[in-house]
Image (cartoon, rainbow, N blue to C red; front, top):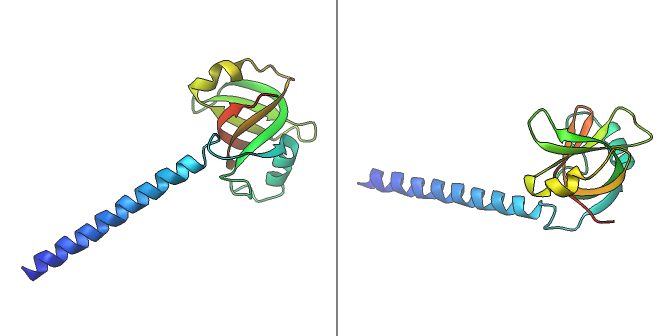
Length: 143
């Protein structure tokens, strides 16, 4: 009987820890959404340069932060993961771009952007992936 009570107690503690972890993860996701927090303004050139100077492991001082990135639209469409995107390029780096993925509810605003147009896009920085600095959950900022 004592052994059964110990197993029951340990099980309750474990379930409690799992529940606390899932609650803290969901609140972290909400605070990192682009609409929930103010955005740090930055140019695409400065963001790319910051990541170019660091190791290409995807980390960086902007990862997880909400940013308002201003740059020149280079292309848009669906990427290799079938996500909608707009890429922002710079005059100073012809290789790297800011890859802004967005949700279906932003399709009208984002698909209206044309190559060569200046735009400010707000989203959560997801770090570097190859030649992209990724901005997820992006929304177009009005100018």
